[in-house]
Length: 421
Image (tube, rainbow, N blue to C red; front, top):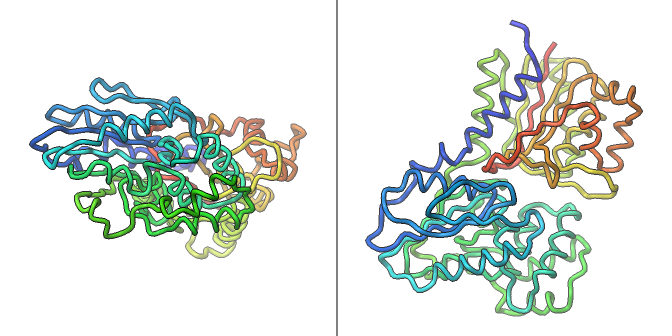
């Protein structure tokens, strides 16, 4: 059987996304019905689909509101789905967060708050702390996105500028029982980082947040600095009694998706090797390392003989210096292509499992051994586009963008490098 690299790469990505689909992952984890009311709240790119999965599986009365990214909604009848801005928060997200916080207050111990949390919730659940404006949060968010800060650093800052994150949503719901169902998009699956942990105790401090802003040379407005230097800016810490009735349940993780993709490779006669589910670092530097591993496999059969699929997940970062278009997956893939320089027998895919690479309309892209050469015939230089952070335009010129539309889930980035002979 002749191997079609492009088809296999796309099939593996589809399997990775399906493994994190809320309709597949959520129903087995629903808690028992309470004596009192069931309030459903949530935020994230998967929140709409999660709410729909709850509606389809729940056998009692429910009400509530979730907020998701524009275009990521789902048709719900009993749970309101609001769409808002991501990755930069907007007024719609702020208003939704205000309503969510109000909904969970004044409940009793007989009531249940079902929180549906997925990646993207940090921007979507945008309720600024006292003395901090939405404009302040927008400006700092934009600066963090361009700075090369990793997701844990960004969310540490977001928590300490928020009136709802860092455990504050769950605290507001006390004494009601709180069950949070989480889809992880963060390295290590740390629930306190996913959507900035609205139902989870936070071990980081306001001093940590200030240090992160200083580390990345981000200007801090005087009112924001004053808030972060105030004791009132602290999040809920481990052991806080207000969180004693909270259960946080991980229903989908990057590792689950990598395992599903590995099965597809195995069925096609290709040996899968999962390199890690939480790889971080500058996208172009990670690309150089993985290019070296792919070349070693091609020439020496190490770390495993070919045909081989090198699979990885996690979230790389991009320090933006150019003016081009492209998210971190396009950046990674173009850097991989430049590093491989037309090497035979090596193809790759890099895409975000939420269907959106950064702020563009693609999930990611495909790379083949002849991609750079084909682009050159069109007058498109891979090196020049990489220098301008313009991976999107590079792969668009070749018709090699991967466009899925919103997948309504999010378990971070998916990368696979296929090495054949």
